[in-house]
Image (cartoon, rainbow, N blue to C red):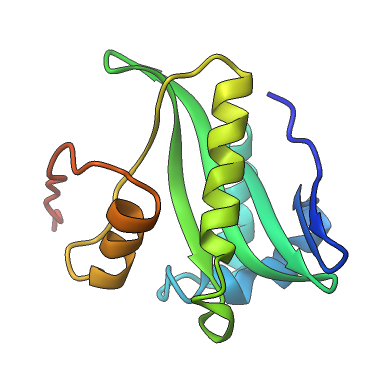
Length: 150
């Protein structure tokens, strides 16, 4: 799966980031994954990348402002893209950056003949749910259950 660069405007660009840029991306990701440390983030990304995890970021004036971590996966549900993280810097929200980045992922899915992009969103993230359902036309398909083990 090739991730092309996409120029949105003279100041906005979407592209896959290099491992050397993970440190720059971390403060954005940390706004979503608040318990994550930089070292753990880098270690986990290295491991997940071996299984197809990709990172696309939206850059504004050369700085990362929005982050998407995703992978193409095959399950009994079908071959699709699963979005693990989608987050825009709190200071840059409501500018349409999340929509641009998620639309980019949808384009990648279409280019690879995939019929679905899926994700989960925590229960209390009402603004995110309004975004997915309202701005992006995603449908609530299931509930995600988890159990923390001692």
